Length: 283
Length: 253
Image (cartoon, rainbow over all chains, first blue to last red; front, side):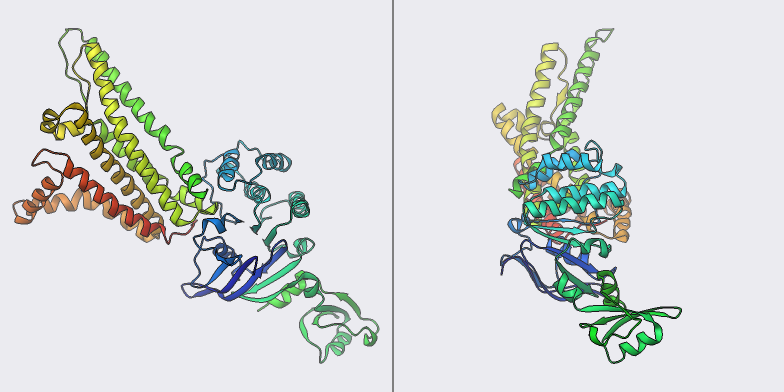
């Protein structure tokens, strides 16, 4: 099987099971959203794929080859994470130069151009960057590294709306020109839902959903209106959550709506990804 | 590809630092010569920079000890395996050991030439000649050069590996471990060892210890070969220790 394959991967930190027998495949040339609540296991998974952590059980393969302690495999993978692992006193332009040493296809000119577009001076040192600009620095590296598998762990942390839009624009442009596999782990679900094709939802170390965005969103719908009418409608149906405000109620249901039997006064809408995610991952 | 890049990254600042130290030592030499020449009552003062190699040995240790965290994390970020990190570190240590051991000999040779030209007492003396004076007297310049370069190289790589092991250990330890190490090391070196030596100085164990040290460093027979072998073996042990430290290390905050 091509792509990155996780087979039975488990990881424990003392009493906490961060990943529990995860089996998953990241296919070539797709944009994935890796979604999960805080502590669900997203970063642990990405760190294991990028050889920063070792799994307690299972293995990760890239085109059939183990990625663990494998320079060749790791040469096709790049991860940006919340932790900045670059030397504090390193200048941005030096970081670009050194990234090219390790990843020969890294486009230094494009990186300089993006730095200018984002307003990042390449003469600055890593430790002098604000949270937002540290994120921008890492995002630029990820957008210019030109490897088949790029993992973005919280790529919009600290970015203002303008910079976030710029990031998504450049991500899609790059994807359009030269497809690659991008895995984006983020809490800004609604924003990223327009960018991602595939969704992986992780809850307490287990994969609970691994489907295309359209398939996942097609799984459910929302009914809103008078609380009493909503209650009668949802009887016997697969309800995954409800919100109430005064006499009004919104219910989130799995399945396809029967438009013919929709009572008057009730509004039927599609499920949005964030709401679906919240309902699926609520304790 | 990753190994070459990792190696380049490890050595990036090493050369500058080390040759800056040589520059400072040469400056001190020149100052010593100038002071002798400028001496008003015209008597020859004996100003010698002894044991120049010791400064470099300490410098190598400090460089190796100082950059573990930064280098390890940068290499992890750029997809370098721990095996490759270890090889690049060992390679860096070996390369510098060889370069510095030869550079030392050339530095001392150059210093002597400058002293001779200035007509003053030689301003720099090698620590190895001071430790093994009979060997230097008995053998020609070429063989002395090779022998002292060999022992110098062994000591340099041992110093580098020691720095790597210590900094790796500190990196791997938790906060409690680091605190314990920070207390234990100086207390052991400056309190415990002197105290034990004071108490047990006259014992058979301490006599055995001294005898062993004299033997493995070739001090009894005045030859540097045992020291070269000893420090080489120590370097291998420290190298193995550094691999055990690196192989399970992970990026940390």
